[in-house]
Image 1: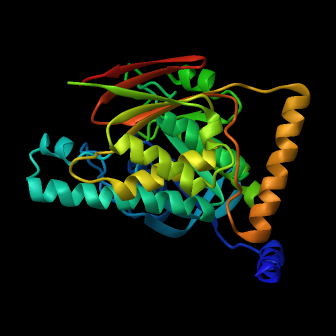
Image 2: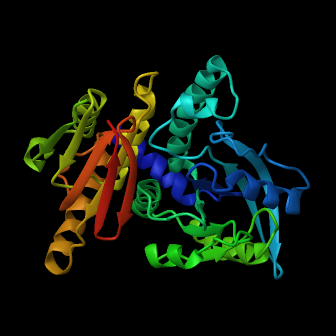
Image 3: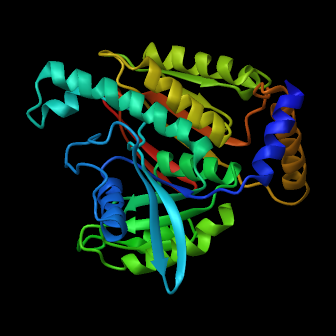
Amino acid sequence: MVFGRFFNWIMNFFRTRQNVRLGIYGCTNVGKTTLANKIAMDWAGEEVGKVSSVPHETRFVQKKEKVIIDSNGKKISINILDMPGLATKVDYRKFRKYGIKVKNAKERAREATQGIVEAIKWLNNVDTVLAVMDATKDPLTQINVTLLGNLEARKIPVILVANKMDLKKAKPDEIREAFPQYPIVDISALKGTNINQLYEAIIKHARKAK
Amino acid sequence: MKLKMDFVSSIKLNGKPQKKKIDYILKRVKDGSILILDGVMKPEEEMELIRETMRRIDDGFPGIEVCSLKKEVKGLKFLFEKINEGGEKFWTWMTRNPPKTDLKIGMTLIGPAKVIKKIKKNPDSFSVLAEV
């Protein structure tokens, strides 16, 4: 068993990875799928998934593979991995507020819990992470702290994305104050504001994972 | 309505395997208790706590609220902590078994989401709004 692990480690060390696996993580309703769609539309002409105001719309890992990003003459091939929103609770009753029937709300909650389990599993299989935060909300949540702590422990490069900059209430400086040790890009995934700065940051930091 | 709060010493959980720690916490929280630990779990253990919570969610248990405050260690203590973490990683890598780690210095509150409505966290404090 020990020799098997050592052999795998050697194989991984010498393996040349073709595509950077870019995980898009964050709490629910911070705009992960909107961002994934923006990146995929800009470089592949196709969306990744459906966007909704109902929490836990993304309940399975959504992928778009071999997307080539080109910024200032530098290119990188990425696999976009749009993760279900992380949460410590999933209450089917919350979905009822959106007019979803009890049976469907329970099914949605069950899928959401499985999605969170899947997203956590994927932490072992991503090269770089975009940690998306809603710039209009308090960034100092336990989910954000736990997520960043895990990425640091796994030595996975992370870029903080302060999203929803198109909204007046946006305060990206609160994210900077809460997590000063990480690179951060202020964007509006919906409007495409500052998206080129994000592509530059992805190229700069994702290469470290190779 | 009654609210039960359990103050648990880190001695109770130190040295226990990750699974037993999480079982201990979730069993009490699922029974309705708010747990206050005089220590902080590692981020990996906290993520595992979230993952295990998701597996145990049902109609009567929508999940947990958790908040922790970790004391930043500096100087020699920081060095010893890093050496210890390196040893734990090596042990995990060699055996594929999670190490039996101790809680770090700090404080953690874990409670049922049904009762805890909101936690407002600051860098060195947090306030909890509960509704029974």
